Amino acid sequence: MCHGETEIWGYHANIVTIDHVTPLHEACLSGHVACVRALINAKANVNAATIDGVTPLFNCCASGSVGCMELLLQNGAHTHTSHAHFPSALHEACKRGNSQCVETLLSHGADPDYEVSHLGSPLYMSCLHRHAACSKILLHSGANVNVGRGGDSPLHATVRQDSADQVSLLLDYGADVNIRDSNDQRPVELAPVGGKTQQLLLTFEVSPRSLCQLCRLQIRNLLGRSRLKLLPLLPLPPLLTHYLEHT
Image 1 (tube, rainbow, N blue to C red):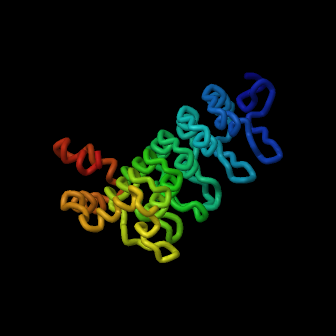
Image 2: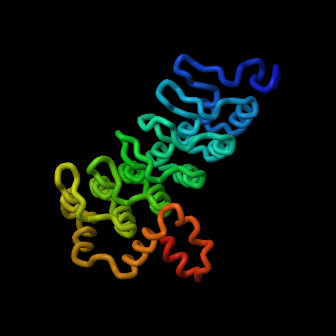
Image 3: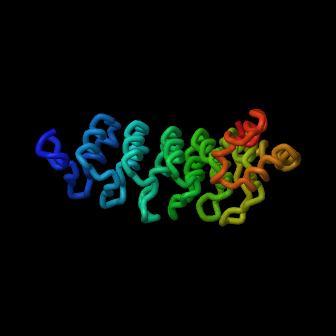
């Protein structure tokens, strides 16, 4: 480094291309932790946005680089942008199936129900792209299981993918099997005929949730999303804590 804190080898840390892409954007997209650290030390703007609204944090989620992401978050990166129509880092992580990125964002205060008008909720995005690990993390953090994109719920999206494991996960967290989409169709009506998903939903309709499941869902709802992370701190037997946490 030379010529002061804002320059590296004579180049300004916040130099931009015509599309407002900075060196930090490129370093995060390539997952170069050492470069990200050097740029941040040289006062690179961790919240710089391209003309399309893409931030370095978004690029971390695209590349799956948790190391770069941690550096950004520790140095003031915002988990969400101030404009709802801009690209969302959390949605990108869910789209790519980068579950560690999802977990890191949520641990730094990202809203698991953050909606982007044309994408829907993060949970909807993870269901649409069949990333059950991301869905599990979001639901564990208290994401609303029935909020999708417009009238389309996460369960509708999952059923279309005929992903039986993910359907089971959503049902376990209280998904409404009677919710209707913009075409007035229930999830079971969208399931491929004869597939595992259709059989799972038909079976569920004749043998609904147990009292054990209903109690857990009710207690978690009463606690509220913001307090779910405090469950391990309660003076409860480990078995009861695990029950409430879905672990």
